[in-house]
Image (cartoon, rainbow, N blue to C red; front, side, top):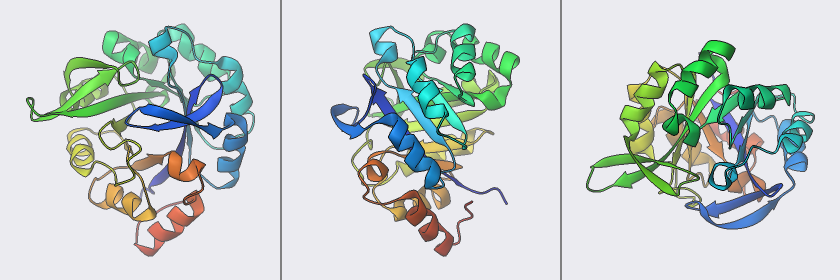
Length: 252
């Protein structure tokens, strides 16, 4: 049986970990290197590092911070933000990342997904999708540039497109649920999980251990990502895993 993964996320801006609600109202959550060390000791399954303003500000990911974080980790490490070319991917992987996460760049240049998958293997390429419900569309729309720009893509269609182009994993964030702590967006998660053949990481809305169970059992997610509830010690990776085991969910 494939075990479900619990993944803390470091949203990094100006060298500090931050967290907001629905991508706004950011507040400080600590030092990325210290938090990485903590999550490694907490037995997190992986760690995601997103330089959340790199694409919007038109700059590269902070490589030196990535190197410092990678030095503290024995668990898989995914890095995203400002990765726009094969050379950018090489730089991030050389800095210690195991996978790269593409979001805005993938929408602007879908061929980049295929280039990365062909060069490094699909297992290295994560496509992050920021999704927001659109009443007129009757579904979710894809947003770029840290949730600032609406695109023409419908989320399920884009998810299928990125898999066709070689993405090995999808990091699916509900902008509607982000930071609200009312639970993951289960309709969104199950819609994407049911439509693609690669692992889907649910993101946005975790507030307690029960929400993780729902993401796996009802949302059909392969992994679940959270930030603020872990950063601010509202619960821990260990507590979430213990709860999941009691619910019969297979975790590491």
